[in-house]
Length: 300
Figure 1 (cartoon, rainbow, N blue to C red):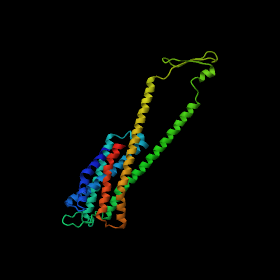
Figure 2 (cartoon, one colour):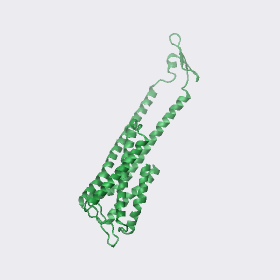
Figure 3 (cartoon, rainbow, N blue to C red):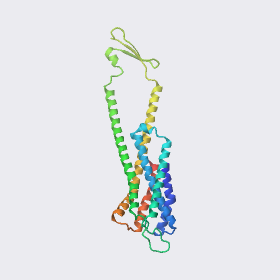
């Protein structure tokens, strides 16, 4: 979660300010070409990193709920390795995309315009390799994450059903089991409770009469049972809270990035020429994801 919060902060520091400048200048790019390219690299890098983080979070929740014994083996170092892998894969993806855009003609149309009031066609998605790469980056991890989340919800449903059946069975056994005075009713026994002694029974003769001495369980044992139950309940509550948080993050990410996915699909199937305002709108909808994530972290 800390790493995901860092991604949102970097979006706010590196990407969104130059996006505001672009909007102020009515789509023109008053800065240098290098900054324009750096802006797009950062945008893709951070978006891919966030996507891979969600993917690893889904794996973490899946193991925690569906494979709890294996989850105990995972350590803090494992989380650090997963975080490092997320940033490394994103770096490699951004570098590969930059190599493609530099070595293939027609990948980047005019990205900036400093000498004319004519607004350029702000379109970097002019290469099928770039488009297919974007499909793979955006779709593949997220589809797998949704499948894992579906398995998690199914396991939660099964757990809920098992718990209900267990409670019903315990209630049935409690109703059918004999009471404390069962022996006294059958054999006319006299039961004496002594908190400081063990349970004894003296049944002379044929057992027609029986004297039973019993004591209640020690308070320490009951306290340990209650403490253990509270620990289990607390862990279960934390797991489901994290599950709910990841679920809201995935839903928010889907809603914010869905326009970009539709844009890429339309771009690939219908053509490569789009007005500037459409891409700016799509980019700012994706930027809003970074603003919504801190709200989700604090609320859930």
